Image: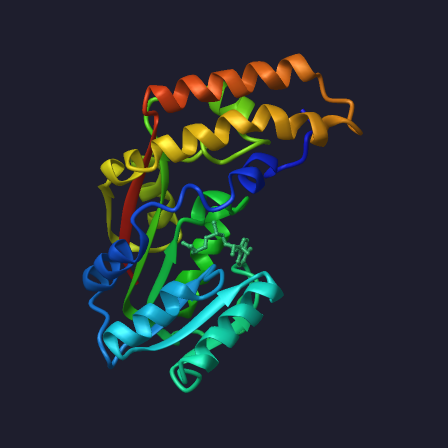
Length: 247
Ligand SMILES: C[S@@+](CC[C@H](N)C(=O)[O-])C[C@H]1O[C@@H](n2cnc3c(N)ncnc32)[C@H](O)[C@@H]1O
């Protein structure tokens, strides 16, 4: 379609961040994080989860994001809280992290896996940096029964309706090498965000006018897709899940 990958995800911003720190705490418990755990938080944004985990559990936390601005903000927050000896921010890509093999007991990643264009290679990199018997725990968007053709149409615009389902994700984690992989459906958490999501989604038509003005994109095709997105949100086709696996 040529609108530019991720356009909708940029407009939606942080609207779809289900569960907040309560879910982060649940992920920490599932992964068994405590003061003796070396944790990597992948795609940490401005470090809220990383800082929370260090404060709540006493763990040593490394936090990685591809955005230098977000890493700067995270470092500032940790400095203010005098946590720089326990939370270490690094600007790096999830595909090629500046860490040795077998460095972490736990790798945790929230609400980002659907955004990675090559999810399998990210999971392989997570596997590489985990210690033997280490645990990875992810949370992320899943979809329920969306026809493949609809998924394909949305793929270039947003991961919201083109994310894998739980069985597809489980297979992906297994392909990367993980054992005892479990996918836990937590779509009730996503539903709490639906009103917010609907409001932002309806603004897309306005943003699209600005965004499309210098492109050759067919406006009708785009508007039809946005309407289809509204219907999919109404029908609760977007869900949320936790994934856990062992090295
Ligand atoms: C939707 S935010 C999620 C942030 C955070 N995990 C949360 O739950 O609030 C996605 C984050 O992934 C980061 N990101 C995107 N691609 C990345 C990559 N290839 N490597 C590392 N970080 C990446 C972005 O910079 C952004 O901070």
